[in-house]
Image 1 (tube, rainbow, N blue to C red):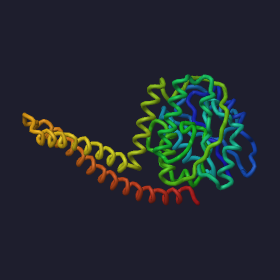
Image 2 (image 1 turned 60 degrees about the vertical axis):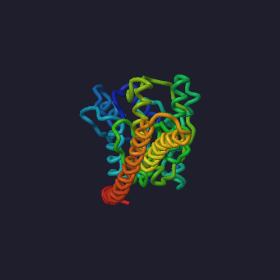
Image 3 (image 1 turned 90 degrees about the horizontal axis):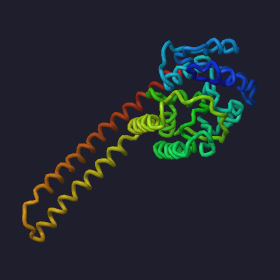
Image 4 (image 1 turned 45 degrees about the vertical axis):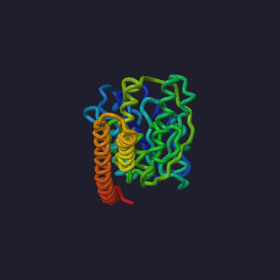
Length: 313
């Protein structure tokens, strides 16, 4: 059983030694532990520091490609080198690497395909009340979309089984965190979480400039993933709302005609007809989107077979 600990980095020469020093050397049930550093276009000595600390697996981007691409490239490298489990942590030493052994246990016991560390964000001192609230709401939205029950869906400290990584396909450029949970929920992969306590803050996030940008980017990622795998829910719901809204003006027109109201009230009929046309259009788009989803599912099944050939069973 080989475990690969993946560390995406962008200018982490100062904190990377702390991360590397705290990764366990042995874990019960794991035969080999290897470390992989994914350098996402760093301009400092991140790569040199990694090599000085004995890291042999290094994936380098000549320019910044983003967290999602770093995750994908790291996973590809890890699986090609025989990883059975991949743990993703951060180069800023936010996460307690000492808990990696606990993080992988549900996978080793065959109880889960993915384990997400719960940072217990309500207790993180450097998180503002607004950020804590947004984290809680964001997790609820993801859980509704994925059919899961994770207290901290945005946490990047995770363990994935090889089976899960072969089934997952990251297409977003912002962050893989939300997308992989929604995909995992749709594909019926077993997900669980364990509580952890984060380390003191070492720097500001480089993934987004402010909480507003984070909310927008996360919202787009969640919406996109949900549309990919459950488009019929979105378009059927929208069509139903438009249909109800379209019937209201017709009912109003019928009532006014019944009581003998003066005036033609054609504007009610025009508004109602427009809304009903929108409802029909929404239902039609929903059917087409669902057919696209079916084709995507068949394509992903084929991709799974290609991945099995590439990485082995």
